Figure 1 (tube, rainbow, N blue to C red):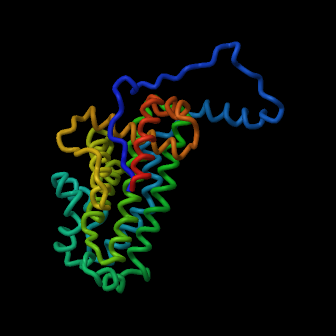
Figure 2 (figure 1 turned 30 degrees about the horizontal axis):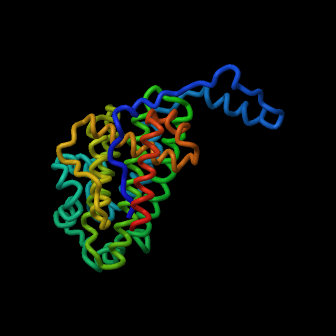
Figure 3 (figure 1 turned 180 degrees about the horizontal axis):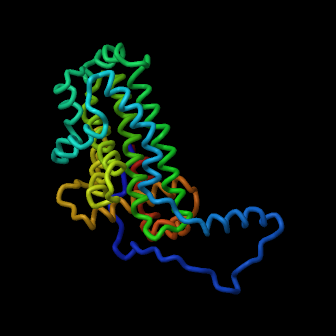
Length: 293
């Protein structure tokens, strides 16, 4: 299991963009004209607000959730999300799935529970369908959020935070399916998935934007996904300040952007506001962790 970047040096937070000197500028060739014209149009387009991108991406998941809720006698996703968020973070990320399974008498965590529940659902493989839907939509809209950075929004942080949350949701869902197939305890990963989904749903349903709680939940999601899949988290989120949570998520998001764009660290730094030295250091730590796994 790869390690997640935990922090970035304070001196590398800004990652200021630098423009080439006049003497270094080159004129486009004829072959570049079409590409450059597209690039010029992209650079003049305003970024779509991060919350709007999330709302579009979350719609299929909410639809699936509503179908499952009706079939299993569970609350609507928005009602469930409010209730999840009313509990302390440790409960949300570790035991929320067990709590709701017990409260509504849904045996989803028992070895044969999903098979039994599947009789009431319009799909043959409820967990596989749910995970496939989560992975497809989370991956797509994570990419859409990061793509907005090309349009140079005034503040890239909300896009990075939501991209991190969606990536952790994807990892938690995949991990829960793998754990269930081996008859392992899936409660932690399902609880983490539920906690992340609750935060995302609340952002779509409320008038507020990406706030400190969102960044803290992104940090918690990173920690609990790593812990629940047998890894050794680099840090404990307990006691982290809001500023530290922002810094951690900004670096984690920059690493996602680096992987997504497949561009040099200095270009990713210009898009994300994270210094290239911090990005390269995070990549180095991750590669070291992967090689020793």
